[in-house]
Image (cartoon, rainbow over all chains, first blue to last red; front, side):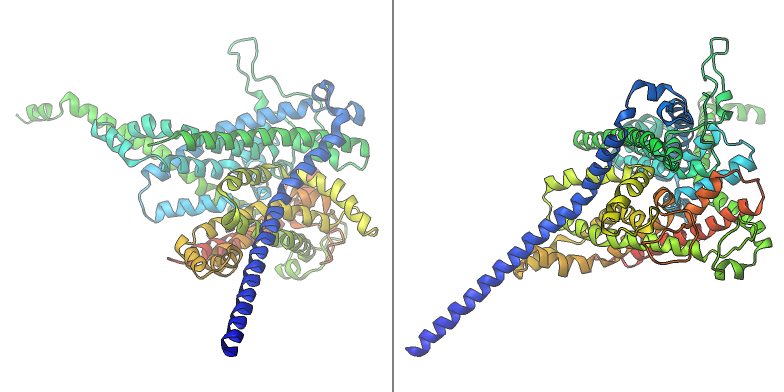
Length: 316
Length: 309
């Protein structure tokens, strides 16, 4: 009798021990979930703090004049005119160089390339290029575009440099977009007598447009904030003039002299102001930083939203 | 008779076919050239770096370059020892990793094992947004927000220091580690988790003792790729870590990194083919070699040691 009772007691004690162990472990779960959430939030909090800090520091400069004034030696009357015009023109060159080449390369790798060492070589190069630091692209451009091809420190040089920089992004996103298209679509087109290029241009490209666009936007938003490669090609930072207008009122209405013009872009202007000891210029830098972040966030947000929409809508 | 035959065989339809085939071939060739641009770019990078560095190493011996402890290529009394720049690069990278490795790993475990589908759908895009923020903005943040903050704790901290640059860089790298490590963890088959749960393990125990060991190769690859990012990062260190090449591993001091040196020289007006001009290519070559090594190791680790289930 006494034996069974003590046995019962020990079982109960064991049970309590087990229960408290389970409780402890469940508590650990909870603790870790909390820590994990904090770890995730650190990034978001930093981004928020950064943006709020920039807006608070730079708010005295948020007016139209800031966008319509040239840089100046006096912080109060210095503006972003040449920088944002330069950014748009450089981005135009980047877009026109990286998108056709990147999409074509993606199409080749996904639709045409045979499975052999040659395609492997290209693939290894694409993934390697994605990991090359951006400043190395600047050195490439300095040696190749500025002095090798004698393009100078021009909008063309900067645009091509950033084009090379975002090429891997465009290629990879094109390939991913194409990969989602089922083989049946291609087979249907072949079955009615289409050639390879007809299949690719009429079907593959058409159905992967959204995915490609997503990659292009992400690439462009990266290019718009890139500073290091542009500094490396030796872009001037004090530019108080605009490049020649691309459109003129005399025939043939297009003017390509702007490609050879000296320029500045938003991040360069920000770096220039930031590296001055005078705090008044730091206000300008903060305002510029807030604008750059806003633009890149908008672009990235659009891309993410687009991808979300595509993923939801497509049902093959 | 023979003439007649050829006329017969090449009917208009066949002729059209030939034209079509030629067009197809031309298009394929154009697309291939576009794909080859990636190979050309890599080749051009290596060629330019080697070519310009070659001129540099005609003046400077390799021994001095790698063992010298003073880097003053632009001074009258020029010294060409890259050690101070490498020390600066490694120190800032180390600080960055000290932040990014724990935070990134925990975030990855949370995303892969704890977060609900909804949380993941919301947080992953936010991490992507963080990747998209231009680094110059982080430079501003390090110099004019984090450094003053740190100076409250350490009043002796100089205005340019590697600590604040490294810390900010670390936060920047978190998304890279989180996303690569999470991919590796999600690749661990569900049956392994289920086996662990069936034995009575909690989520945390499963994550720590089953999923993480099974995904080790991917997690390690994430760390190595992160090192490569940190080493190649430019604007944060150029703005906040200082411009003075100093041989020190103390993060509370300011020192130039390889990237900061390149920026500093490129900002000035250096004559083409001068030794200063060539020195940035030599520094760039070292940087390229470092990042390439880390990237290659990272890829090999991920590919070769990927556990097969």
